[in-house]
Amino acid sequence: MKNYQSNTDMELIADILESDRQALGELYSRYYNKVFQKCIKMVKDHDQAFDLAEEALMKSFENLRNFRGGSSFSTWLYTITHRHCLEALRKQRNSNVQSATDMIENDEPLEITETMDTEEREITMFALINALPEEEKKLLLLKYLQGETIDALQQSFEVSSSAIKMRLMRTKEKLNQLYALASVIGLPAVLSQLEQL
Image (cartoon, one colour):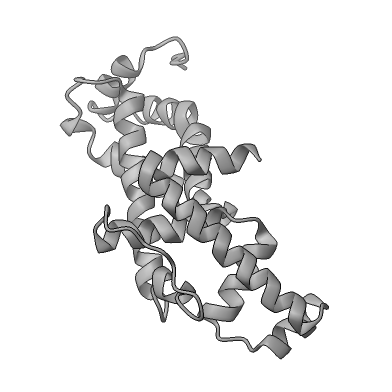
């Protein structure tokens, strides 16, 4: 059996285009974990990241003939992965009863700047919600997406109604600040900072 581990990406791609399945397996093994890690950073969900990584890799392999080598294969692959994850976030957002922006605009509307178009704004907001600590994210989703009452949340989180209201207020304020920051320095930079906290 031929050993492909010492082959360059371009050599593997040439073999794959000649229908070499072992070369395909080597390229898959070489990049799967990196692609998965990129997906999980974007969607914050292990199962969804697993599916998205598989899909992004398959999409890139199906389009290998379009790879011209103007950049490294890894850069080309990560660009496909990034776009695939953004598309998944957009579809996920559209499947919700309310958009991520509307979900938060309840008692205290978000201070949304006009530096982004509507789609970019909603993708940014959805990504920021996903990046919140699990407890904060869960509280927002239950209240604004699923329409849970304060009483139901009080029982679910085992705290007083005033504590629930305070947590909601603080979390929305935090989201406002994160959004404002993302509009200035960009979403990736904000998400990177959140990961380091």
